[in-house]
Image 1 (cartoon, rainbow, N blue to C red):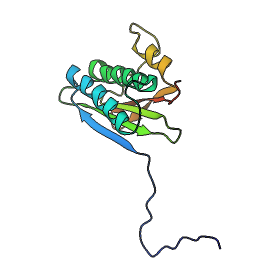
Image 2 (cartoon, rainbow, N blue to C red; image 1 turned 120 degrees about the vertical axis):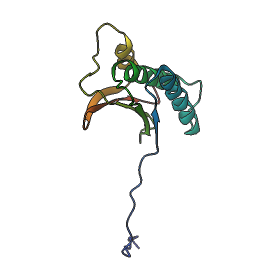
Image 3 (tube, one colour; image 1 turned 180 degrees about the vertical axis):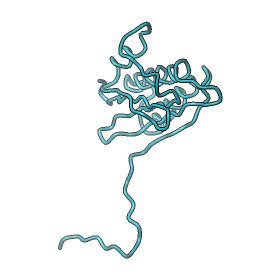
Image 4 (cartoon, rainbow, N blue to C red; image 1 turned 90 degrees about the vertical axis):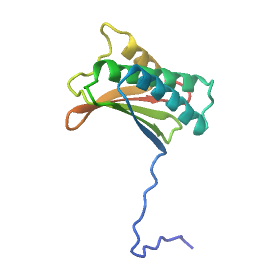
Length: 144
């Protein structure tokens, strides 16, 4: 017999990927706290603290959070860190700041985004209306 789903007028919920979101102050301390919270969340999700993937994710969070503080800061506004577990077992890191006009570049004066490019399986940026942006990076369990 085939199983059938029965709808009794109740709202059907869709399973969402586990995620973590935290608003942080746009300060050096906020960026450091974001990195520490990210590592603790990954460990809570079963990643090993001393694993290469955890270390890579920590470095990527540190760079994206640092960029949000240094280049995406507006007085009185913070930044948002989000982590999403991917079906592949990897992690998607998202850092949202209020400065949508200041986009990251793969090269330039700093080496930060080159580090992200090397450690992440993929990364990019998307608008966060009305005026912000979200920079995201994906870390796979086995590395990039």
